Image 1 (cartoon, helix red, strand yellow):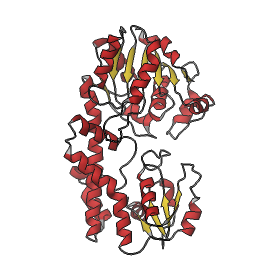
Image 2 (cartoon, rainbow, N blue to C red; image 1 turned 180 degrees about the vertical axis):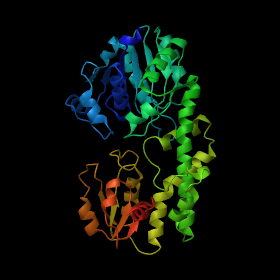
Image 3 (cartoon, rainbow, N blue to C red; image 1 turned 90 degrees about the vertical axis):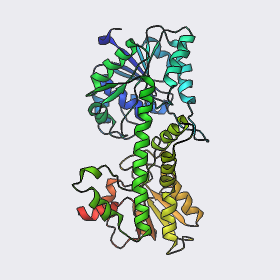
Image 4 (cartoon, rainbow, N blue to C red; image 1 turned 30 degrees about the vertical axis):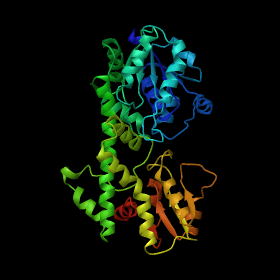
Length: 398
């Protein structure tokens, strides 16, 4: 394979993981075709618009020559490519077991257009052992196609920077596939770390489970402090200020989104559903909305109360609402008989309200997601439930 003329297809190329990777490779002079079944997103990108928020993404999209980055919906484009990168979702099912349907569907869609000598790079989070199974299934089909597993390690919204600045884990089914992965990722990133494929798959699950557990620790500490009538924000600040051993203790808040919870459950499934730490983290993180409502109910009835939720994304300064616990909070409040008014500056929904209306009409406010724009709000005199310590942090910085 001639590295200088390497042509790369990205399946799921209009998605949050696939697009940032496509842009990163194209800016490093790889010829990339981003393939996605979402026609609306593909058309937006062809028109020079981003379908979601990504820091620096729009500017980079406009700078890249069309010869280096193109967008389409047809899978037959992979026939002319040397490398095919899969960036499709890998959720868990209703039993909290891995659901690899999207991955296998993507493989089946491109299989008629594969030929000997190509390399498939799996970027999606995978149940350990899946990459090897895909490699063996392609061999059984008579295809001499290499497989590499190189997990994404980015935070949405900051992907372009983090792909460049963070080490990338790579692996391969054979030396040639590993060489291809090494060439691509050592070109676009600061460093590569080589593992066996199953080790790399497990490394990704460990990373997200560790982060999910850390959030659970902080959330449990928050609940204990609140139950005892103490100020968790002050305690957290005392623990973490100029003390390196505790600097990685996160603030409390909703641990949500499409990755941390489901990858923790994938790790549990890999270990025969025996992962007490992971399951305990799930109990803590998923119960935080319930805890907040129970605290309110000790002092007032929610029935007939107008309640506002500020922020419906799963994390601050993002337009991604997948698996956001703000929606669980809304459902629980509605169950208690409250009239719930939601607002978010980055998410459009027919049942959302302008921020000004929520602030004016609601008797009680929850910080659902700590968007930076909310720092402009004067919270003085407002009844605010804030597990993030967002308001107190704002007051200290004002």
